[in-house]
Image (cartoon, rainbow, N blue to C red; front, side, top):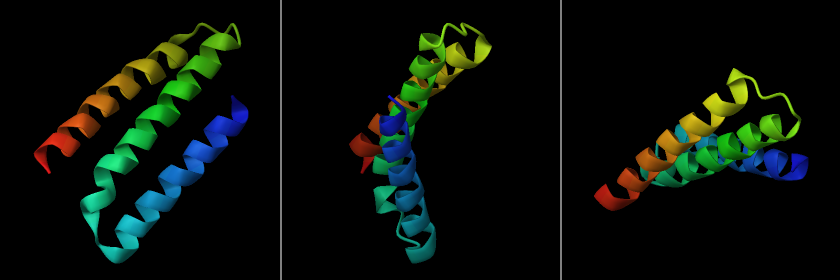
Length: 77
C-alpha cells in the first residue's frame, strides 16, 4: 500500500509539474484522476492502521469529490 502511494504521488507531481511548465492543461483530468486515487489510497491506509479518526474518512470523501470532478473533466473535453 505504501508503494502505491509513492507511485501515485510521483505521477501526480509529474503531471502537475508538466502542466505548469508547458502551460498545457489538457492533462488536468488525468492529474485529478490520479490525485483522487492517491487520496483514496491514503484514506484507506489511515483506516487500515486502526486510526479511525477524522482524517481517514475525510481523505475518502475528498477523493470521491475529486473523482467526480475528474469525470466531469473527461466528459466536457
